[in-house]
Length: 103
Image 1: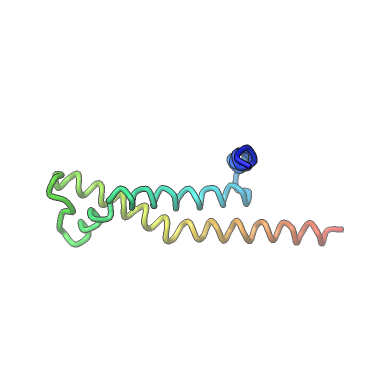
Image 2 (image 1 turned 90 degrees about the vertical axis):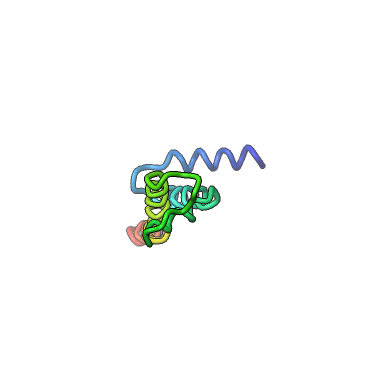
């Protein structure tokens, strides 16, 4: 079963550009990167939006950069990933529908 999972992973990685697999892969990658940033504790640095620094153990400039990185990843996960996943689903279903109606 482990070999099968690895093979499916490599099939997903070898997707054509703008194919449903490619859109799905990018949507999942955005969510994974955001989850990693969230688990690393970068959420506390998002307080730079209100003019405060997130942590006392880093400088204000570092806190601002970390906060900006977290906020960009958050918006990508909230806005970009669902769009990519919906586009992948619509493209896959549309491709199947068009291929069945060509005959």
